[in-house]
Image (cartoon, rainbow, N blue to C red):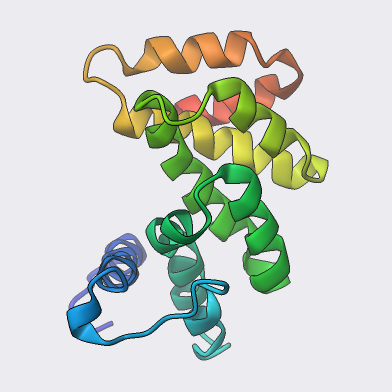
Amino acid sequence: KAIAHSDEERKDCLSGVFNSLAILYHQPKYKLNPDPDDPYAFCRTLPEGDIAIKQACDDQMNTYALSTQGTLEKGLTLIMRTVEQPYLGNAINGFSSLMGREALAGRVTLSELRDACSALTEDLAGRCIRSLVAGLFEFGKPEEEYAVAAQFCADTPHFADACAAGFIDA
């Protein structure tokens, strides 16, 4: 709050704080000892009054959640089980965006990701697809990132609106 000059700067700062925490969870020397079966536990301890803090935490625990779960399907199951209802979308956004990186690296196929997203309720499935497309842009090869996202969206016509939103987010 003290250094941010706008809501957007505060959101970026909060994202950095919680992304750093998720990264530090991987380092035994810090002795943080998070629960691998509940990477979002810390987020539930944060004050209820500041929604931006809770949203940033649930969004940025993605790197730790991925390391403990390994797949989008397992990650989404974990999110649905452990993240508080108002913040489910934020956790799904962070996790599915990061899965775009995994697809680009060949560790998972885009059809597997589409299937995992599709298994959610329609609203959450749309958020999952939208963030996955944004992740394909974020982690894609510069000047070519749109090609993979465009092909994925062409192969996913029943989520055309979510795909379009992912292009806009990127």
